[in-house]
Image (cartoon, rainbow, N blue to C red):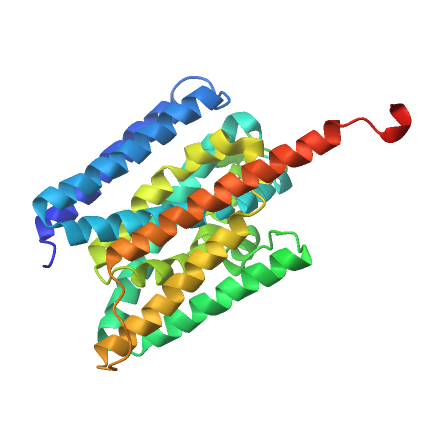
Length: 327
């Protein structure tokens, strides 16, 4: 069942309204730090909003679309947690004042949402025309999963490397030496210049687009509906900014999260290849139902999160134990 045009208009219009309110709240009054309590409220709001949207899908269309949305949303949200590590590095590298970090993330994520929308439209058109791309996507996801595990086992630290778009912005626009409040441009001696605030927003947005190179194929492995792909990405990105402040130092304690994400990517990659074979009438290739995908994704994230927190607690207890010489 195809999604009518009115549904696209309603969803995009609703997202714009919510984000406009969010941006107004961020910009009003003096710049201030985002507290843990505020972050908790906003994360809860966006998660509940996504849940309500999924239930509306269920009531308006059918349970299959709702299941695809929830599976895609959980996958995109889970993959976004890993992206937060890089966001922390970007914020540190550009020395963004804490009071302005929430605005940087909001605008950067808005840029990412627009670019992902274009990426999703192109990907959907390509997959509809070239079905063999499902094999490419599946193989790429399995390769990415293996690569994540290898890097984690080697202990390679994630780092931020400036991409082509960011390097072009630096060359193309004269930039002030320091921040000028929360302004992205400023006029100095009659010359219009950009501030590091704009540079870091571009860094966040363009880096998130690079992350989409594995997350977009992953969700296309769960659903072929561009509407579900777009809305799952949109809801996941909308709550990402508040999650950044809510998790804070907790990210460092999620030591097994990379293994969980790698397993999810590998599972979806295998699922994508099997379903492509099934569509090609290969008799032995099964078609994995969406409820199985949703169960595997949800269980994986719960297990890896709980295991990470247990290990962090055990390590903390070991660190608190007195040294034998002190006893």
